[in-house]
Image (cartoon, rainbow, N blue to C red; front, side):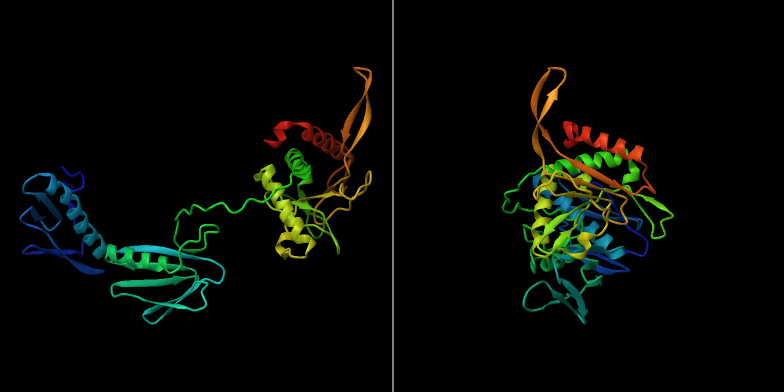
Length: 357
C-alpha cells in the first residue's frame, strides 16, 4: 500500500471542499482549485467536512502507482488554498537587480538589455532589496514553474556562482585555472604570530583615540607591509587564523601584486590587529619597525641567512639557519617582561611543526 496515499488529508478552517462527479473542488482564502479524480479506480470521501480520504477500489500495481500521486495533488491544493506556496530567488552578480512595473517584472541580469517578465495570473512577486524575489501563489506547480523560468533567464555561472538562484541553494563551483603559488617563509611567520597573539592577548589589542581604553580583539587580522614603487603600504589579511599555509600564500601573492600596481581597495587597508614588516627581500641584518596605530605592536623580519654556530653539547660548529626579527610595542599596554616572553614564545612557535597544522 502507498504510505502517502493511506494518510487522510486534513481540511483547514475556511477551506471548502465539494465533490461534483469526478471533480473535487477546493476553495480557500487564497484561491480555488479543481482536480479530476478517476472514480473508476478510487473511492473519494469527505469525512465530516474535516478530512479527505482517497482509497483504491482494487489494489494493484497501477492503482498503487497513482494512489500517492492523487493524494499529493489534492493535499497540495488544500495547502495552496489555505496558506499558499512561496519560493525565494536571489540575484547574484554585480549590477543585478529587479523591479516591478505593473504586471511585469523588470530584470537587469548583466545583459546589454533589460528583461521584462510577464507575471502570470495567480502569482504574486514581491521585490526585496532589489536582489531578492519572493514568488507566492496557491498553485504549487505554477509557483515552481515561474521560479524555474526566471532562473533560466540567467543560469548559474559555474566558476563564480553568478546568476539567479533559489535562496539556500548550494552551488558546486568549478575550480578555475590553478595559479603557480609561491610559498615563502612569511605564511609560516604569520601562523607563528597568530599562535603567539592567542597566548598574549594584549598584543592583539588597540587603544581608543583618547588612549584611555584598551580594546581586546577576538579576531586575527594581520597587516603585511608591502614595498611598492610609491613606498610601503600595509594591506590586511582578514581572519588569517582560519586560513591554511597555501591559502595565506595565495592571498599574499594577490595582495602584493595588486599593491604594486595600486589596485588595492580602501577596505583592504582597514581592520588590522598586528603588522608584520618583512624586508628580507631588500636585505639588511635588522631594523626597528614603527607601530601602525591604533595597533600596539609590530614585528620586523630581516633577511634569513646561514651562520656558523657553536654546538656546546657536541663541541662542534654547525651551519644554522638564522631569521633575525625585532619587536616594537606600545609601553602603555605592554611592558618589557611581556615583550620578552612574547619574543621567546614566537621563536619556539616558528620551530614547532604543530603551529602549521
